[in-house]
Image (cartoon, rainbow over all chains, first blue to last red):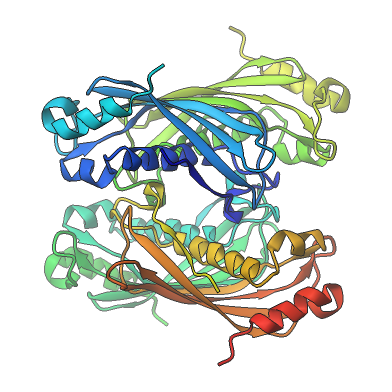
Length: 139
Length: 139
Length: 139
Length: 139
């Protein structure tokens, strides 16, 4: 699977001259949606099936800082998935010195767009279910 | 009418230690929606009527900079409104030294949420139309 | 102590029509800096003493969603502080139905702005140290 | 010169399900800094020389909307540059249908990082001056 990577944008920095802490949840999201696309389950397909995937909880550990222009990549693993819930873990490294910048996780559930109630992907979108199972991290 | 005012948030600053330029369009929006609420036309009421108000164009002139903790107020005027389109002008001043920080404008149209086609507020939501006319800047 | 409260901004929502998950770390920051100001230690004073307070880790649990226009307040507690590190816990409630929207925590350390090395506030800024100790949650 | 292009991020959309208007100033910035890098004047080099380039004014015209997942490219032209000021114009097109999404401009000046006073790049950073002149749009 391809790794998600890009450069830090200028507007992502704050007056400490480093990427603002809240932006890491955005980067996690970018990497997660990229992962799903790579796994054959692009998010627009999910949404067309009337499914939303809100975040249940999220955690970030900040190991080092990044500044404007730094290039980074994100390693994503889908560690849990049962059709009703899923969990991802993330590691962001800077390109070049390979420093670990941030790590963390996010948990998600699946809900119906209209009723806003939990649903099981196995029933609603079986092909997506199979692909998610296949994308599960083995360890 | 009450003036919209608040403090600069830390995360609005960038590595120049000043409020990032893109945030001024957000501040214009905050002040515009506050203006509409003050004028008796809260935006949720507009949206419940199936109306969206996208931006057609927007301009910002940056006179001075703001840093974290600065307090500012925004003067908003509705300078044009005909039921199909409207235009606002803005002036942001810092509290204390009263310095002019930024000025600008934004133009908007009204569209149907579903069809995404232009509509006239006079027909769709006559009470809102009357209140907007009343809120028009005289000059 | 006064509670931090404000309304959801339109631009904080995403295409699920709810406040985007990353914005909660921003709201935590707003509330944390407000808490420090209330406790007599405004952040600009900290920065003038050459101290930065980066985030070490942060966690958010999303209990319910908020939409544009919702009013909320944030309860902040400083649960740990020893001059070198500190930890805050947060609870965001919606005004009106008093629903618990999100909870979480953030840990921080103190570093020297120039050297970017850990420092102890007790030595660098004793008055701030005393005020932080006084602001510590009792339980 | 290479064109700046990327996909719309999920968090760039708002509750209208389209990219929020303020994000276009961010996209202009991304494209502008990419342009400078391509022209041999990466922004970090500018900053290391103690130069900041604040925005003087900016304008966006919104022709069509973009949604999550849309791919777009930005055409940037440096239309004015005299060492003290510069102006860029932008056009954002969606990949695929090639629709014009947004156009606009931004003007900038050069200031000294410490004194926060205007400076002329020709004297401060002659090589950058030459490269900017070379990057000027001919028309």
